Amino acid sequence: MSKNMQHPLRLNVGSLLHQGAGTSQEFEFDLPAIQVGDDLDLSFLRGVLRLTRTGEGLYIEGALDSELELDCDRCLTSLNQALSVELGELLYYPPRPGTDPSEGVPETGILDLRPLVRDHFFLDMPTHSLCRSDCKGLCPECGNNLNESNCEHPETELDPRFAALKSLLPES
Image (tube, rainbow, N blue to C red; front, side, top):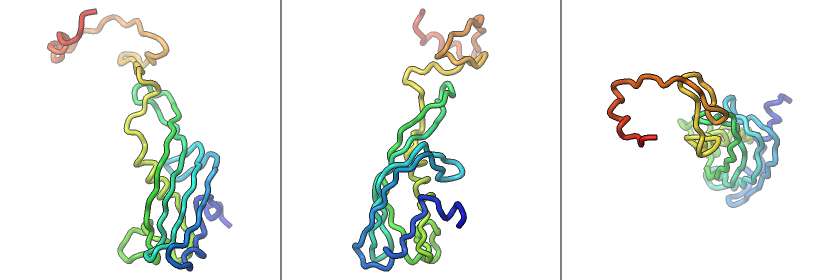
């Protein structure tokens, strides 16, 4: 069996698909570092998902917790960001013609949750990440991390287009 078939987010839901509406099954996840897409690695993945058979397919609901490694938007230092996502998705079975394959459960009964989990984590990812609220960022002259040390650059001449803005700054 290929490594892809053994991925912990690939679930065999064939027996659940042949049950009556209202039947459900819970899947608990407590995984170490895991890759859920070519562009997303999670430090861990924990949570419980309940899959419920409906007349239209499978309804997936639950919550997953993880931690992402991001870069600070100001100083580019790596930081770990805790993230929790709530899932509530209906996947059609059998898949409906003309719909995206990710919106249905394959006829094989093997459900790959990676695209769904990936999408939810990307949608809930913060738009701005800071290593700390008072991050000073990088020096625009030399690129030095101003959180670690100050730079001793001579004062540069102000761009004349911004001269009017200087009057708005408090005198120091």
